[in-house]
Image (cartoon, rainbow, N blue to C red; front, top):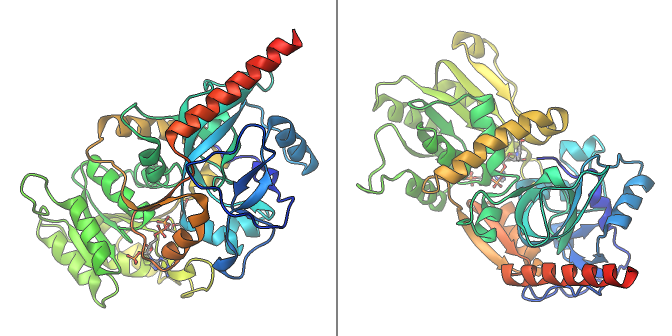
Amino acid sequence: MAQSNGGENLFRAICNATADAEDHDHITPTSKALMQAVHLDGYIKSLDEVKAVDVPRPNFESYLALLKQNQRPVPKEPLVHVQITHTAINHVDLLYAHGVHQNNKSGLFVPPFTLGLEFSGVVLQVHAVNGQKPTFKPGDKVWGGSVGTHAEEIIVPASAIHHLPNPTWSLHDIAAIGAGTLPVSYGALTTIAGLSAGEVILVHAAAGGLGVYAVQIARALGAKVIGTVGSQHKAAVVESLLRDPNTGKIPAGEGVVNYSKGGWENEVLALCKQIGKDGVDVVYDTVGLVQKSIRCTTFNGRIVVAGFAGRTGTGAEKVQALEQLAVNRILLKQIKLLGYRYGETNRRMPQETVKMWRGLNEMLIHEPRLVHPVVYKTYKGLSHINEGMQALRHREVYGKAVIEVCTEELALKQAQQFNNQQQASAVSKL
Ligand SMILES: NC(=O)c1ccc[n+]([C@@H]2O[C@H](COP(=O)([O-])OP(=O)(O)OC[C@H]3O[C@@H](n4cnc5c(N)ncnc54)[C@H](OP(=O)(O)O)[C@@H]3O)[C@@H](O)[C@H]2O)c1
């Protein structure tokens, strides 16, 4: 899956007036020049500044013209115009909005841009590039990842989207597992950690977006899971994922530990002891807990460093300094410390991403019982973006918060309208 090459700039606001968000059960008529999007002209100081506003509706000509104007490379692959039905709120949205993500600092994503990283929707139109046509057609249901998804519509290179794994997935549910969330945890656990059946993994922030799907992926791979959480309500979410559906019990060697209490490492080791192990084989760390995790790891264990939510917070303030490691501990336990950046891997090694998505799709097709959406709340309409981002910032969200931009039915109708319009203009040119 590719990130869009600067398509985010397309949604530059042309009017400063903030319009009331469209109700989610209406869509922008094909004749309208503006649509709703959560567009930022500059980095924010407070989340109160985040809201849906009117921006120009995308079309292929303006998309390509803007890329040229911003001296961005024109994609060498077909483009796809999608009516977004659902978008999920991502931790990185908070970092991007405040301008504190490494991609803001490197200049990859700087305002003006539309927030949002993951979406599902219905294809409205396709545009061949260099004679190549996409494998998508108007009316297809898709999900994908790109900057600019908190909007009614988006244009993306074809490699940024995917068909639904099978027709049993709804556009709501596929958005909730998130093309910018589930694949991150899948890549971290498979390609990077090489997690295998019978191993034990410690998943930090196991009720967070990356965490809940890491728990499910690990289980689907046949591994045992110990999850950490910071609150009781999140412990209940993870426990429900670990319970055996037949017995209602959590199997030996698995469980949930509250890391807001001192000495949580001993609780992890006690769970390992239940199955005769002296530590976990793998740690998935999206919080910034490497030093303490080394205590929980067996000899020759692997630690995947994928985020620092507990240290950098959600953008408004830095909670703690990044860790300084006592490297002798890495040597003594022969630990393999592995970094993972999903987006950067895709930018530098797109073939790795393609390979990884093949495995991920297989899992979604064959393990529907084990990999399923965990939804904190579904907000109706982009006008609720602020509420959702506030909840994520205050660590209330477990799994994913989803926004229904419009219903599947309306999106399909919209695709039909586009199709009719195109056919009419083709006839008038004859
Ligand atoms: N490496 C990559 O490619 C990649 C890709 C996407 C995201 N990330 C990073 O991975 C991290 C987690 O992403 P996510 O999507 O899982 O985020 P999320 O849905 O917001 O979950 C993060 C979890 O971290 C815990 N946490 C601990 N201290 C926190 C704090 N001060 N503020 C907020 N949360 C805190 C919370 O769980 P408790 O309340 O239970 O403690 C929260 O549920 C972020 O740092 C993100 O930037 C990395």
